[in-house]
Image (cartoon, rainbow, N blue to C red; front, side):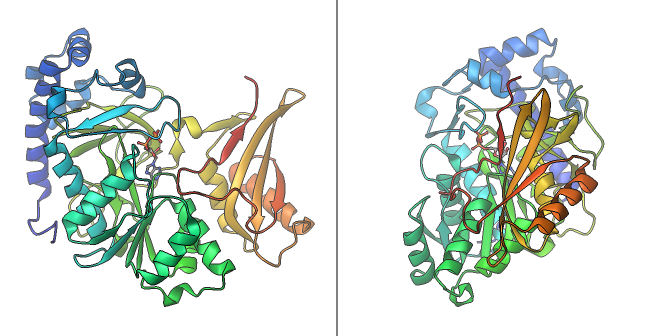
Amino acid sequence: MNPFKEKLSLDAIRALQSNRLKKTITHAYNNIPYQKNKLDKAGIHPDDIQSIEDIHKLPFTTKEDLRKNYPYGMFAVPMNKIARIHASSGTTGQPTVVGYTKNDLDVFDEVVARSLYVAGAREGMIMHNAYGYGLFTGGLGIHGGATKLGMAVIPVSVGMTDRQLTILQEFKPDVICCTPSYAQFLGQEFYKKGIDTKELQLKYAVLGAEPWTESIRAQVEADLSVKATNIYGLSEIIGPGVSQESVLEQGTGSYIWEDYFFPEVVDKNTGEPLPYGEEGVLVFTTLTKEALPIMRYWTNDICSIQYDENSALPYIKMSKIKGRADDMVIVRGVNLFPTQIEEVLADVDKIVPNYQMHVDRKNSLDSICVKCEVKQGVSVEDKLLIKQLQSQIRAKIGIACDVELTEPFSMPESQGGKTQRIFDVRKI
Ligand code: ADP
């Protein structure tokens, strides 16, 4: 199956967006009392929304709105029309509950099939799906899209790493889908066992659910002998497959399937829309969702969006997520995302991008300690290396910090879920 058989032009996408937005807002207004109330309060009636250009008139939706309506208060269809229920991972608090009609699940399959296709997957290939199955949208979401594409899916789920290594060797999958930290971990485990990953059938890794950078890509590509691309998504919008990086255009951002999810980037303080290319909070409006239509969902993820005139498909692209707005720590007045540390570590040869940031306050002064793993054969007492890391972090980020080197493979092992990089124990 080729999900791009029918090529949409950007004009056709715009027309679809306008049409779908009008329907979505009317549907939400008529069927979700909470959203009707919110629109009434903002003085907006669905008739005020005539095209996609009117989207900025709409109020934002936040995780808090979903939490207030826990579990089903934001559903726009009766429960007998709901075909599946998932929940967010709960990384930042109480999980939010999301529902899908059969049509919503078809859209989910469609956007994941598109995503896997641009990642390099094809009909007839085998998918090793090491995203968690269960309430998390990752496992079943990737499963449905891979099936739609015509792949054979191995529903491995997370954990039991030895079994994963055996399956990767013996079942000969072509594609693996998991978190980037788990891909790193699998690579290390193959190395420890002396298994040459070039002997595997694996060609592509589709990685997402947490922020990652070019340094992790380089490590995973080398350690697993694959081409690795980014998949992004969130349960409130649908799950994985909201956007995907093309394997032919690595490093240029991820295509957002904007005929289904309309993206905006807004100023994190004022909520004002920002021009293409400027970094801010990513906001999505669903354009076809029946069970959980969401207008202007404040993802809290920081990135920029932009059209790329050299790309093969007409869709807008988003940059890699720098972090969640609430992953940002302010240390002695400097705003800091863990991915910034990761980028500095990428330039240093003797370490691997496996790290943690520990933030504390001593004698009313913020202190930060970066712990990172050294490569095999490098001493954790290497004073020169510690100095080099400290001065590079200071030069690139403008912050003085302690650095602690840890033994190879000493960081907590990823079991496939999201990895915690920041440990902020300051009492505010
Ligand atoms: P939770 O918000 O509880 O973690 P989800 O499981 O729905 O729930 O996760 C969605 C979030 O995961 C996104 O908002 C984003 O912060 C993060 N995420 C997903 N994919 C990526 C990715 N490719 N890069 C960076 N962050 C990602």
